[in-house]
Length: 446
Ligand code: PMP
Image 1 (cartoon, rainbow, N blue to C red):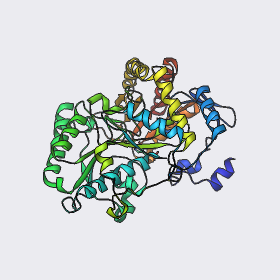
Image 2: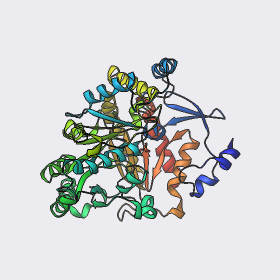
Image 3: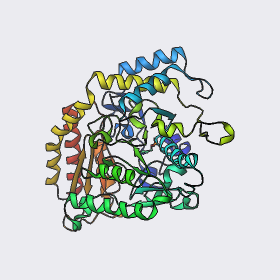
Image 4: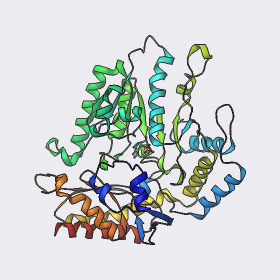
């Protein structure tokens, strides 16, 4: 298998030497908070299998939901017909998402859910008044933003590595600074950083609002950017600016949604209701690819009309509204509610934060950021200068490998070690995750 993996499977980011040369971790099965490799070794899933797993692996009730649905039907198309789980799920999503969000467009990856939100926003203005809004073709997103890898989604990304080569193909984007208090301390405290970022966004909107279709943000935490936890009130400020300057607000809840930050959706914490919201990852509890974009009636109604009016949204995936995925999502949400998982995440995260503070004993830990069960540890060479280690020094990947050797899966995002555990992890397992991470960092420093 190891040989065939190298020979036949194109993994993401394969240019990295560490991926090419290291022994691949080949997972064979999972149970609860653990994954097991082909040699029977056990790993604590401190990454929730790329931020998706909610109730643990091989969860009996989710397994049963899948079996029950597959015995009825696995898939039929949503183009020209409907199916039971996708109807029930859409109704449920309308009930649990904030405000009057009520129209659900299904897709299968977070990037597609974002891309659909962008396309809807772009077309919405044309549908309202093609002449008046002819210029509303651009998007604002934050520095270092990550919203997925399709050409549309990567357009609003702020990571040069991901989009540089495709630049001629991309939507127009205007970047706005993201609040990153740790590296913006020359501006003052968190509040000052928030005010600065909001004032920069306002300046952009003042000049460009006639060209802006929408502003896209990850509510509360920029995940892939390195778990950048935004100061309180930032998201609310973004919402207020969108309303004042008549641009749509798109919240990308792909990473933060479904309980990860201690509320079902992160935007609830600031009482924000976006015009469009994209969801994915945890929606099926980490079982199957499913994503959704939800919007309100005002936007949906702008797409109604006869074919010759060109108001239709011409976007339709083959597997849109897949029955297996939708029935899993329904069961996932039912279990979240039945088990009080969201409140539990909040409380577990509170208890974990004291434990995380111990990481500051390690001299290369610059900052520990946490929101719910999203944790980022920024590793620096020098706490005063905040200089990061060079790629050649290989510090971060050695820490990650060290953790893996000790039976823990975590990952790095640039200079940040990130932990995004399975949401149902027990306090003991969460403690073990932090302990192993602590030792993995400590040993590399020595
Ligand atoms: N948006 C955000 C905020 C994400 O974190 C991700 C994935 N990490 C995506 C979109 C893209 O989701 P997917 O990988 O399922 O396409």
